[in-house]
Length: 629
Image (tube, rainbow, N blue to C red):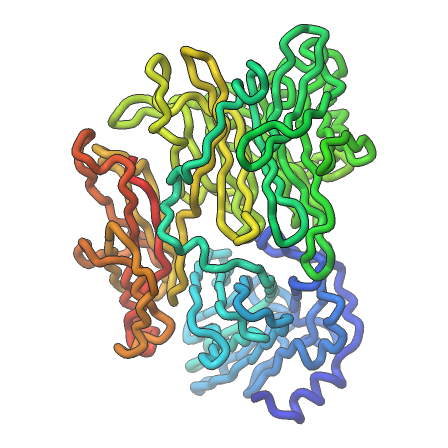
């Protein structure tokens, strides 16, 4: 509990901060940093001005009407603001004075509690630990408020004795506030300091449906022959809407190429059984747009309380064959009617070759106004490209080094990840495939290492296993379940197929780190690795693998491991692993050769982490799940 007198002092210090929002921005923040809604808080302390412990409210909810109570940064001990320290100005420091000293800073950030939601908590700050100084940070937990959490930490050297520290945590069930304490220690003349503290808290509605045993890449049994459903047309992309209300009745939106030079491209609406119920004629033909509507994306308009108000499907159309540098995103409402007022026209599209673009919509982009990410599978040796545009068609950023051949894209706003679907030929131990999926963090646009394949069980005897990737979308069902809608092209007879895959890879709640993967999970692979990251204090780790998960996660509190759970069957385990770099572990899992019977067998992974900074010295990680192809 923070003493009342300190809260009163903090209240007296609350005045407007003369800090420009553009003066400082975090490095790779969450996609929802700075978003103005009722479930997201974005704060920044630069420890300068007359009120150094009062944050700049970058974006706060409407209910956030008493910042002195809901947000607190309370120092204790001999902390002071130092005007300059090794290249940083106005830092919070504990200077050395020849004796051992200690102090602390308690930070509390409020957010609106939602029972059975997940709270994503992200912080970033710069720390200085000179000779004889140290800063120790930890998320303080009230176990009466939530049962389990996951937390990962990374530190990047900045030079001059400074490091940039980033902490990601998922808290479930949510506490109604997040608390973090900084402990400063100095010996002799050493100095410990922090600067530029960013805090972001977002509440998301996700149930336990991602923990139902479905491995990443597992087909869910739904598939539609789109060529048959549309009367013989070639279809290139799909999107999914579920509409408002408790029924969550799905509609599948399918783009179809025109058949004659003067005829128009179309977007079909199918019900959840795959039967067409409407068709939208686009104002574009094979002459004006040879690739048709090459991908689709969905925008869901929600109220402040999270109620779905409307949904729009966007079709990306490349008009550069007749309109110089022009690409348009055509908007379609839930009834199938074109909505020209919501179109996004890009009149100065980057000079890349004509091709099938991928399209994803990010509702958190551009401070919550929404952005469109367009992938361009340009040929060459440097990889594909992606371009992010605002609603006015203005280019916001260019993303380099995508996989080649990315023809479909999707975005999962729940955890902030993009997904690509590529038709680049990838060699596997069982032959080449052209249905390659991968995951990219929306925080920094870097690959996470998670990869998957399309449905390789689809018969395609005269072409590559699983066909050729064409279109892609990810979405969450009304139940919270993750799905990836994939469109592929098959040969003899030539036809377009739609199916859905389950996911994601990471699942479950447990205390420490992030479980990941690297390489190809194919029979015969010798480069498939299970990884662990975000555990900078870990000295050893051991990975367990199993062929099933526990129906009910087993709490390990009885063994002194608070907030750790056993998530999987413990069918096999590695030896003790040393970190490959600080905070990072990897175990190469040898897979049996092709034909050994493990194709399309799900596997589950979880790490045991040996960390001397923990009370028990041991914790478990969240899990990972994937198919072995």
